[in-house]
Image 1 (cartoon, rainbow, N blue to C red):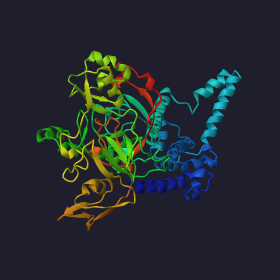
Image 2 (cartoon, rainbow, N blue to C red; image 1 turned 90 degrees about the horizontal axis):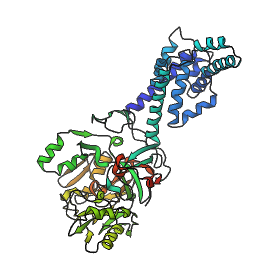
Image 3 (cartoon, rainbow, N blue to C red; image 1 turned 45 degrees about the horizontal axis):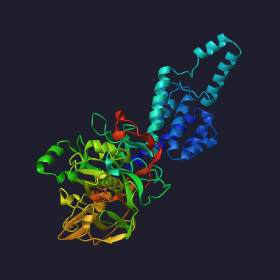
Length: 527
């Protein structure tokens, strides 16, 4: 709300500043106060056609158009210095008021026309061989920019443009973990379309450009939580479909401890022994807004309104077996001994390498079912079988973190309903664990419990109606993926975008280990 008030006040100040600026021209000052008309007259004063003002109606593009018009306006009053242009970009109303009330600043004409005319005079003198006239014009050229200024303006514009492209249209990501292997590999660099599921306007506006949430080396947050904008998403180009790879903000990443190894949510930290917790908590708790939570990439297995269940590693949606990714992996135990490295070298052509070996258990390999079959054929003396992951370090680590009522494992999970906007479910003490984070965190209600009863915003409740859609996301590396089986649903407002293609791929994310040339320009959203 504070940002909306700021924008309204800024527009009012802009209109008033145009009123006073127009007084220095032959334009009726009253037109500066009339919405729409003021921008049309503004275009005329800088040498643009009135129709040019229509660009201001297009989101994102209008930011570049407005800043360009602001710079051209002060230039039309003879203010050609870098500091004048910078002030016009930073806050146009202030630049316009400064120009309007400075008696020395006069309207000299449409800057775009004047600059073209001056450039033509210089070219005519050069073509005519009039070196004296050309040199004189060049020395007195009011539009000439020094090399340093050209360089600074180019860098500023490049950063400005890159920041907005990254924020609204396309962003580059790197795969840091094996949770999506073998579909997407560690070291894959992806382009992700942010327009696919609807451009999400920024909520955090005070930030260091081109940084997501932390400053490299320093480690501190790269943004300020205030001021902030309310959540808004433009219409989507496509809908999320089952088995789509999606990029989203980590739902559990609202309160985290950032250790040198990784981010740990406050809940994850609570599962560790007290002495380990103490070591983690020394890094300090960080509370992050939605758009500054860590980015995750997983495969969406269920969409709003679906029912999902995992039975013996097979995912079922609405009672039917879901098509498995062609490169889906599981952890396999190799007995009685590990495969020697020389044997692994012989398996490289099957994309089975030393990186697939679990560093904590060398008898354990991450493989596709096809790769496991190859090992059986190549080494018949070896026994190999999928590892049964029904025993985890802590029973509460599995969503909904309530083993008393939901005794699920990552291999046998559900059934679970994926919430859909507008749908209503019954809630009680036995199933509230499924929805308490939705109600209290994602949808911002006051959820309390008293005498076995549930209260939402102070009212006793036995049902709840969802206010947005939710999704179920899992990694293709089913035994090495921290996903919805651990932290639950992905809210619609956490969706970031859709992966497009791999534009670079480094072996194990290390340039010195080489480039995977066969993965360049490979589609990223494949099953």
